[in-house]
Image (cartoon, rainbow, N blue to C red; front, side, top):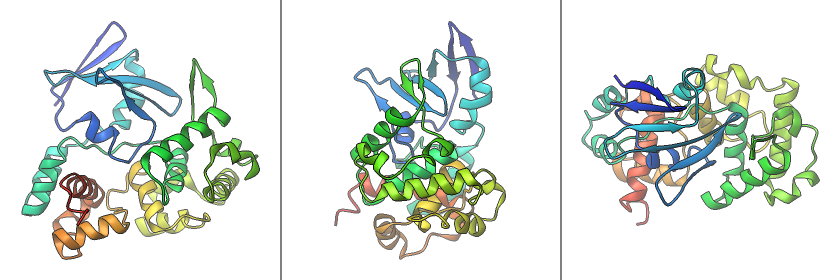
Length: 278
């Protein structure tokens, strides 16, 4: 179990296992984190800005935050209460999953704000990471709230008042109409976004797919990264290719309860080891 030390407005997390910052913050599940030349990551989540790094002795340092924010926000956001060693032991019963989990050591599932996550993966469709980050940054700067120089993600209520023409500065293309539809359906309550973690996976997926432009892959990304649906398994051409190459097309049965975590390991492993380029 990790230990927390609060000193000079910083949180020091000692003895934390399975927490690699690049693997977690730059693996494609969140798009508002950046790393500087000193290895310090900075980003905005919810209405909070944070800088953090992992030191040579394995301590994770959260800069300029409070105990209350750590206990009430960051601990859940970084999924620090989950035993990832136990999950890796389960997955390691399969040799290929073990190789993927070992290679992808330290990936944690971020528990993100649901509307931001939904919009982020609507934006991600047929897009690359750099463009996704740029569109989201422009969306926040144009329509989010400025808090001490950083911008929050706009609320559904705010975006529901906008038009596709209002979103022209984002240069988001066909995705603009989907973002407006998502905002209107969430703001009106037509889509029950904030109770999806209590739905079955199929029910939650169907609820999200009421939104124009949201198919199974976008829905499963939203459910995995903001609604604690661990069995959600986002599939696109790349992950399907990885499944075919590594497992003959089907995820092993032992991984089903943690399918979303396994998906992160598989994709990271297959991408970095060039299995998806052949």
